[in-house]
Image 1: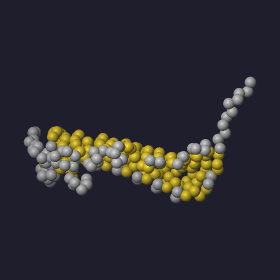
Image 2 (image 1 turned 135 degrees about the vertical axis):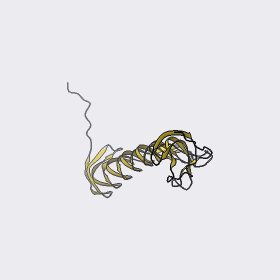
Image 3 (image 1 turned 60 degrees about the vertical axis):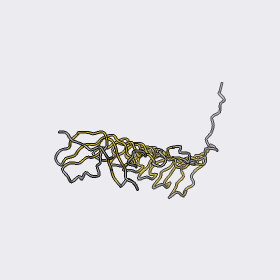
Image 4 (image 1 turned 180 degrees about the vertical axis):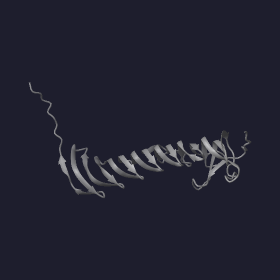
Length: 227
């Protein structure tokens, strides 16, 4: 079965992505009420005028490009669709700076899997502020966060917050402990990097130390050998 597809206009995906409509060019396929046709078309068409309640309509399916303008001058993302939803490896851009905002796995229109979240300076220099696991659009799993220049967190996440075991690097200290909802809770240790000392068996509750722990000074082995 063959289909005639108009290509005069761009494909309008949704007005829910932001304040502006998002336009799409790429692979699509036709859906009928009884048959799911695997015919794929590479180009552009006007989906906005196709009503899913009609006998047939088109949905994005495969690789494509999202734009924020109908003239295809401002790119929003290099994406993959499965049956009309973002699914697979995608790269999303800031439409004002053309810098990458996110690159990684998507599932059901949200970051899900492994991905990198970017920020950029005034000079439009990109740098990663989070690299790790995502679930349902939130940081969940194991990830590396560098949101503040002088601070780094490397550890477990859940629901966009530090949850589980993790290490926090800051001000010549390394704090290794259990976290709950972005706060230190439970036992852990503090390494004083510049002094070569440790404080072990510290206990935190809601980011406050309730047990100071024991200070340990590592003993260096002598280089002398017995004859």
